[in-house]
Image (cartoon, rainbow, N blue to C red):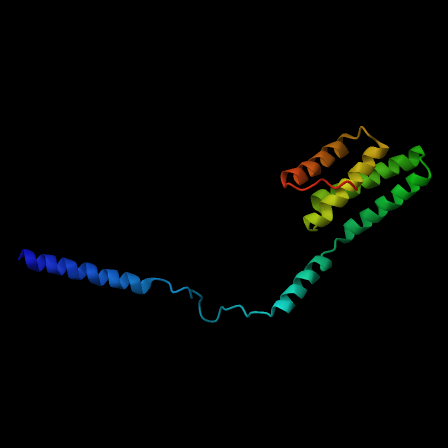
Length: 150
């Protein structure tokens, strides 16, 4: 009787182990009909290039142009009116680029840093520009990248 029970137990274990091996995924776990068609590498690269060049933010472009105009005017005439304009326009451009722009990090942090520096050239005690400039510089340092100088 013991031999029969042991034989049954052994056969049960052997059959369940073989069923487990059958259930192992073979690496092809896709549901039929859900395959994504492969695109040639050249098309893939073109799509990636277009994505980065297509990513434009019209508000960012408008604010940047306005800030650049204010910088040009302030360079020619350092009046209090132009100083206030350069501070306001550059701070607006920097803040939008840093916090709201729908652009990749490479296209937003470097220009934002530039505009915060322009604000600090005109108004070295501007607390918001100091805080945001420091934050961007800390981001670069934490990533092990050199802080842009321009």
